[in-house]
Image (cartoon, rainbow, N blue to C red; front, top):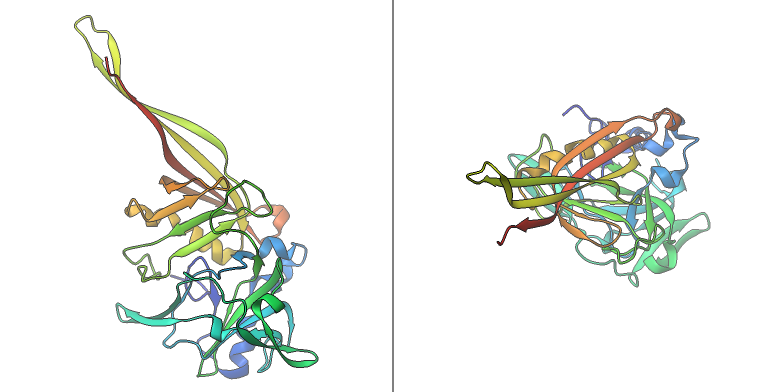
Length: 314
């Protein structure tokens, strides 16, 4: 696939594999969407990927080894493309990456299946020097960050911008401040450059609710001797739409979501009311609203759920 990011996944990383050391860091950091000039008038909160405060999102990347260090950097961290990033916490002890090989290609993954230990000590490099803190003591609810994966060969992967917010994995009430629509995808077969799911699913949280449902009626009829039709079975399916804005690498992933649907249980969507189920008949439409200046794409995601059915019992 002809893409500049490492993989077309839900949590994308930028890379520059032909360079090492400071040249690699400089080139890779400049690819982050929020640094582009055409995004300067778009609020950072709109650019950022939504991540839970209690649990980091699953991650996957195509690299040969696990990172030696993992840094959580404030969006305005200083010297972000130098050896020492000011405004960054070393969260290596809070994350476990596993390496695996599939079809001759090497990958690493973080499953994101456990809560962050918020009491574990972490080192944070500030303008005043190195301090010891914790996740709970340093990470702000609603704060804007990105992740750097640093490797032994002096290369780095830089993530897209994230916003870390205290919201539940599965919503209880449709409160736009604390509820997120949740999309989880797994694939049993490779999709382009995207390997089949090992242990880390692809997951997206969306602030926007489902809206504008339509209703699809299907029925079976029988005809009697008088050529009169009678319904023997009927079913109604509810077709939902959710519309949201994302950066180009996340739009790349969203365009692939319908390809996950070869397995009926491959896509699980939980809406902001907490109603979750398998879905079918997924369609994705992606456009580039002029008012967003090319910084963000608009994604319209359509999906169908079984609603109710009826069988004539007379």
